Length: 439
Image (cartoon, rainbow, N blue to C red; front, side):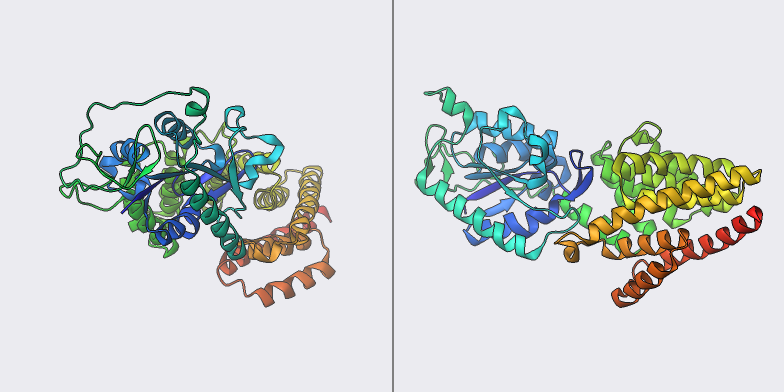
C-alpha cells in the first residue's frame, strides 16, 4: 500500500498571528486522512507511532512516503523544518496546505510565498462541516492532479536543476515490506527493485500506544472530569515532550480542578506547573487566563486580597493583548470585587467605574461576534451569551439583560451553567455591597 506522510503539529497549537488556538488533529482526522484512505493510501503522522520512535519515523516518513502533505497552519517551526527536509530530498508530490488565517497581513514566510498552498478555514477548536466537504474535494483534486502530472514541486529541485540525491544505505525495520515509492531522481514508480527503501512501518518489538492515542486518552479524561487520571496521562506525555505548552497547560488545569490533596494546595501546585510557561512575562492568553483563574481561586479560598490583585494583573494583561471577551469579563468582575473591598468611597467608585468601562467594551466585543455571518457555527456561542448576560447586569442594562437571559434559556447552556451561575450570583452580592458603600 502506498504511503502518505503528514507533516503537521499535533493537538491544539497556538496561532500567534491571530492570537487563537487551532486544533490541528481535526484537520488530519476529518480532512486529510479520509481523502488519502479513499485514494488507497496509508496516511499517518509521526505522532501516530509509539513515542520512542518519533524522530526516526519522521525522517523515514519524509523520505520514503509516496506523498507528503505539509500543514503549516500556525507556522509551527517543526512543520516548517520538516517541509524543508522533504523539499531537499524529494522533487515530487509534496503539497502544502494551511489554515486561511495564516494569510492575514501577508504573514506567509517569504521563502514559502512562491509556493502554491491550498487554504482552508478553521474555526479554532472545530471545523465547519460545509468547509470540510469543500476542502476535501479541493484536496482530492489537487492530489490526483499532482500524481498524474508528475511535475517537480520542490523549490530546491526547481532552482538546482540536475540535482540528484543518492543514499548509499538505509537501515530498514525488520518487518520491511516493499511498496510503490518515489525514486530519488524521478516520479512515482510501480516497479520495485531489491534496493527499495522500506516503507513506514512499526517495529513490533516496541509496542505501546502511539503519541496521538495517548493525547486522545488524556483529553478524554479531562472531558469526563477524571482529573486524577488526566494528571497521570499528561505527566506521561510531558516525559516525552517536556516543553509542550499544551501538555503543561492541561496538567495545570487538571491539577487545580482535582482539588487534591486540598483546594489551596491544588491551586498552588497548578501555578507551580504553569510557571514553566513564564506567566509573569507571557503574552499567551491561555496561560494568562489560567494564571488569573488560579489566583482568583486562591483569593476565594483564603480571602487574601493579594491573590485578587495578582489575578487581576493576569486577566487584565490577557484582555489588553487579545481584546477578548473571556479575559475582559473576568477583568470587569475582579474590578467589582476590588470595589467591594475599597478602603474609601473614592476607591470603591474608581473600581466600579473601571468595571463598567470594561464591561461596556466586552458587550461590544460579544455583539460584534454575534453579528458575524458564521456566528451560528461557533463552538463558543454559550460562553458569548453568558458573558453578555454578566456584562449587561454589571452595566445595570436590565432590558438587554432580560433579552439575553431568554437567549440563554433557548440555547440550553447546560455545559457552562454551573460556572456561569456561580460567578453571576457572586456578582449580584458584590454589587449590592458596593451600592451600600457608596450610599
